[in-house]
Amino acid sequence: MSLRVVRPVLTLVPEDDGVLLQRVAAGDVHALGVAFDRFHRDVYAVLARLRGSRLDLDDLVQTTFLALPRAAHNYDPAASARSFVIGVAIQHARRERRSLVRRWRLWQARTHEVDLPEASVDPEQHASDREDLAALESALAGLSHAQREVIILHEVQGMKGDEVAAALGVPLNTVWTRLHHARNSLRATLDARGTR
Image 1 (tube, helix red, strand yellow):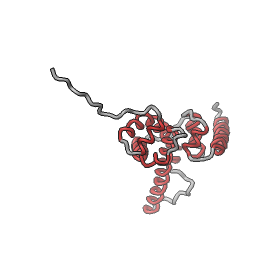
Image 2 (cartoon, rainbow, N blue to C red):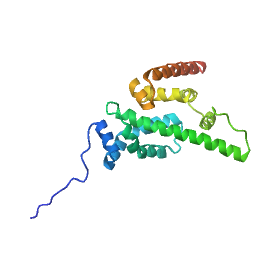
Image 3 (cartoon, rainbow, N blue to C red):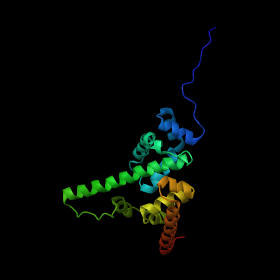
Image 4 (tube, helix red, strand yellow):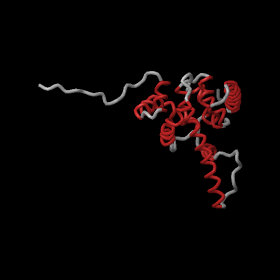
């Protein structure tokens, strides 16, 4: 009878999220896979609520994690790893949104079929206006993008104020200000619709 030596195929996975992100920054592909397993549901949930559409959402989640090794070099181990990863996703969503608006305006300019939209007009908002949304979803869509971000991260995802600030890259006071205005705006919209 011969003995077989069993070698571990995968490296040990750190329990600490901060150590995990440091390994991702160092180029550990296995650690990146573990980070995806740990955080992709949170990233997907946040992006789905921010976009209001599931169109190309999987691609955006994948892009977030492909960018994570480079972004992780800026990770502060004292901060929440979850907030950091969600912040990377939000930055990519913002870039994609700006790119979408630019492409939309370029297409319109080339076709001369309609006037160019003003800079503040969001094509996704036009599409969502035509859909039959629930009262709360409509009220959320009426918020500014910055207010929607803090409401979704704080109220829906249950992130603490400092985690939201870290994810968005803004001061904590800015988070509380945006949250205050977002809540007031939602309350006014829902009151006007007779929904509470």
